[in-house]
Image (cartoon, rainbow, N blue to C red):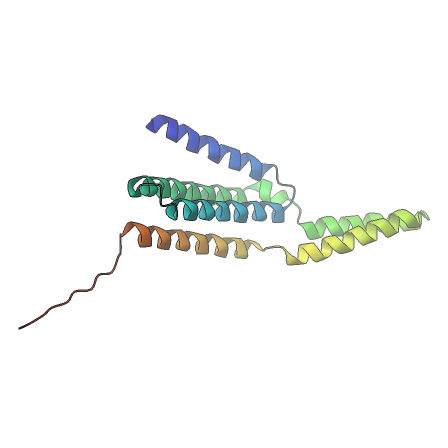
Amino acid sequence: KAYMEYKAARMEQEAYERRLERCKTKEEAQRLQVNEMNGNLAELKSIVNNPNIPKSEKLKEAQRIMGNTFRAVESFTRFVKSTEYRDLPTEEEIVETSIEKGQVAEDSNDTEMSEQLTSDTTVSVDEAAKDLQLSDVHQIEKDVIEEMKDIEIKHFGEKKSSVRIDITV
């Protein structure tokens, strides 16, 4: 059973790493990481808040989810340090390239194509401006992990506070 759980966790991590490698831009990789973190947090909350799961199972599942989260952070950090990530274009660079291609189309009197490309790139620039930066991703990772730890502590009593009342007669 333990081996099967290990294999499942390993397969999940490998699938996540393959999804990272398939990303076409840096921002896409960052969104993938944020979605992975939020997915783990949502899964943890749903398990912790389910009254039909015994506390021992909740603890086991919480530890599994925390392990998945730490492995995802580790995989993303390794990916960010890799040459594959450094070679990925940003969405802004793709927009600039598209604009340059649009100027070439203008020069060849293909104004319809140029207008279409310009309207598409305007939307892309707006979306790129809203996208997360790498520092934002790291902050989100920290926030999610802290929230996960707080949930674990709150529900599994590792640091539950107690009140001591002394009555002297």
